[in-house]
Image 1 (cartoon, rainbow, N blue to C red):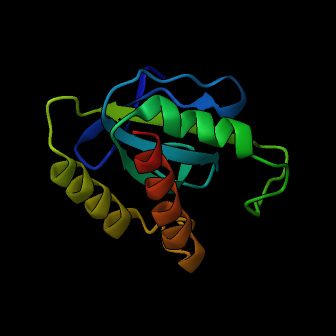
Image 2 (spheres, rainbow, N blue to C red; image 1 turned 30 degrees about the vertical axis):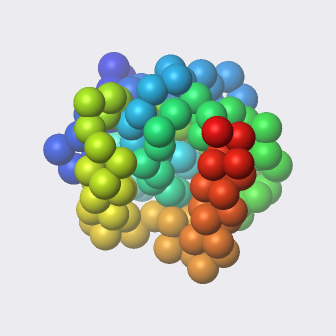
Length: 130
Protein backbone atom coordinates (compact mmCIF):
# COMPACT_ATOMS: atom_id res chain seq x y z
CA UNK A 1 0.00 0.00 0.00
CA UNK A 2 1.63 3.25 -1.14
CA UNK A 3 -0.97 5.59 0.30
CA UNK A 4 -4.43 5.74 1.81
CA UNK A 5 -7.34 7.92 0.74
CA UNK A 6 -9.83 9.67 3.00
CA UNK A 7 -12.41 11.54 0.94
CA UNK A 8 -10.55 13.15 -1.93
CA UNK A 9 -7.30 13.50 0.04
CA UNK A 10 -4.32 11.22 -0.41
CA UNK A 11 -2.55 10.42 2.87
CA UNK A 12 0.79 8.67 3.33
CA UNK A 13 1.05 4.96 3.97
CA UNK A 14 0.02 4.30 7.59
CA UNK A 15 3.08 3.99 9.85
CA UNK A 16 3.10 2.51 13.38
CA UNK A 17 3.07 5.34 15.94
CA UNK A 18 6.16 3.91 17.66
CA UNK A 19 8.31 4.52 14.57
CA UNK A 20 6.41 7.36 12.92
CA UNK A 21 8.05 10.52 11.71
CA UNK A 22 6.49 13.43 9.81
CA UNK A 23 7.94 16.56 8.21
CA UNK A 24 7.89 19.92 10.00
CA UNK A 25 5.22 21.33 7.69
CA UNK A 26 1.48 21.96 7.71
CA UNK A 27 -1.09 19.31 6.85
CA UNK A 28 -3.76 17.00 8.18
CA UNK A 29 -2.86 14.00 10.32
CA UNK A 30 -4.94 10.85 10.81
CA UNK A 31 -4.46 8.59 13.82
CA UNK A 32 -5.58 5.12 12.77
CA UNK A 33 -6.36 1.72 14.20
CA UNK A 34 -5.93 -1.41 12.09
CA UNK A 35 -9.42 -2.76 11.55
CA UNK A 36 -9.91 -5.39 8.86
CA UNK A 37 -13.66 -4.70 8.74
CA UNK A 38 -13.22 -1.01 7.90
CA UNK A 39 -13.62 -0.20 4.21
CA UNK A 40 -12.12 0.71 1.81
CA UNK A 41 -8.81 0.31 3.68
CA UNK A 42 -8.12 -1.82 6.76
CA UNK A 43 -7.46 1.28 8.91
CA UNK A 44 -10.18 2.94 10.97
CA UNK A 45 -9.59 6.64 11.65
CA UNK A 46 -9.64 7.47 15.36
CA UNK A 47 -9.09 11.18 14.82
CA UNK A 48 -8.15 13.75 12.22
CA UNK A 49 -6.22 16.93 13.06
CA UNK A 50 -5.23 19.91 10.94
CA UNK A 51 -1.69 20.86 12.02
CA UNK A 52 0.73 23.70 11.48
CA UNK A 53 3.57 21.25 12.24
CA UNK A 54 2.81 17.60 11.50
CA UNK A 55 5.97 16.42 13.24
CA UNK A 56 4.92 17.91 16.60
CA UNK A 57 1.54 16.18 16.44
CA UNK A 58 2.99 12.80 15.44
CA UNK A 59 5.65 13.11 18.15
CA UNK A 60 2.91 13.86 20.69
CA UNK A 61 1.16 10.58 19.87
CA UNK A 62 4.43 8.66 19.95
CA UNK A 63 5.32 10.04 23.42
CA UNK A 64 1.86 9.85 25.00
CA UNK A 65 0.53 6.61 23.60
CA UNK A 66 -0.16 4.03 26.29
CA UNK A 67 -1.17 0.38 25.82
CA UNK A 68 -4.93 -0.09 25.82
CA UNK A 69 -5.72 3.64 25.56
CA UNK A 70 -7.77 4.46 23.64
CA UNK A 71 -9.83 1.28 23.96
CA UNK A 72 -9.42 -0.96 20.95
CA UNK A 73 -11.28 -3.94 19.59
CA UNK A 74 -7.95 -5.65 18.96
CA UNK A 75 -5.48 -4.65 21.70
CA UNK A 76 -2.52 -6.11 19.77
CA UNK A 77 -3.15 -4.06 16.67
CA UNK A 78 -1.44 -0.81 17.69
CA UNK A 79 -1.94 2.73 16.47
CA UNK A 80 -0.83 4.13 13.13
CA UNK A 81 -0.50 7.61 11.69
CA UNK A 82 -0.82 8.90 8.16
CA UNK A 83 -0.71 12.47 6.95
CA UNK A 84 -1.60 14.66 4.01
CA UNK A 85 0.60 17.67 3.25
CA UNK A 86 -1.22 20.99 2.93
CA UNK A 87 1.82 23.26 2.98
CA UNK A 88 0.38 26.04 0.84
CA UNK A 89 -3.01 26.14 2.57
CA UNK A 90 -4.22 28.44 5.34
CA UNK A 91 -5.08 27.41 8.88
CA UNK A 92 -8.77 27.98 8.14
CA UNK A 93 -8.53 25.67 5.12
CA UNK A 94 -6.90 22.93 7.23
CA UNK A 95 -9.64 23.39 9.85
CA UNK A 96 -12.30 23.01 7.14
CA UNK A 97 -10.64 19.85 5.81
CA UNK A 98 -10.46 18.44 9.35
CA UNK A 99 -14.15 19.23 9.95
CA UNK A 100 -15.22 17.58 6.65
CA UNK A 101 -13.24 14.41 7.43
CA UNK A 102 -14.72 14.22 10.94
CA UNK A 103 -18.22 14.76 9.58
CA UNK A 104 -17.78 12.02 6.97
CA UNK A 105 -15.92 9.33 8.97
CA UNK A 106 -17.16 9.98 12.56
CA UNK A 107 -13.81 9.04 14.17
CA UNK A 108 -14.24 7.94 17.77
CA UNK A 109 -11.68 10.23 19.39
CA UNK A 110 -12.50 13.36 17.40
CA UNK A 111 -16.11 13.09 18.56
CA UNK A 112 -15.31 12.42 22.24
CA UNK A 113 -16.01 15.43 24.51
CA UNK A 114 -12.59 15.18 26.19
CA UNK A 115 -10.83 15.35 22.80
CA UNK A 116 -12.05 18.89 22.12
CA UNK A 117 -10.73 19.96 25.52
CA UNK A 118 -7.36 18.23 24.94
CA UNK A 119 -7.13 19.84 21.50
CA UNK A 120 -7.70 23.29 23.01
CA UNK A 121 -5.09 22.69 25.72
CA UNK A 122 -2.56 21.52 23.11
CA UNK A 123 -3.16 24.67 21.07
CA UNK A 124 -2.48 26.83 24.15
CA UNK A 125 0.72 24.87 24.89
CA UNK A 126 1.98 25.27 21.31
CA UNK A 127 1.12 28.99 21.30
CA UNK A 128 3.05 29.41 24.55
CA UNK A 129 6.22 28.05 22.91
CA UNK A 130 6.04 30.53 20.00
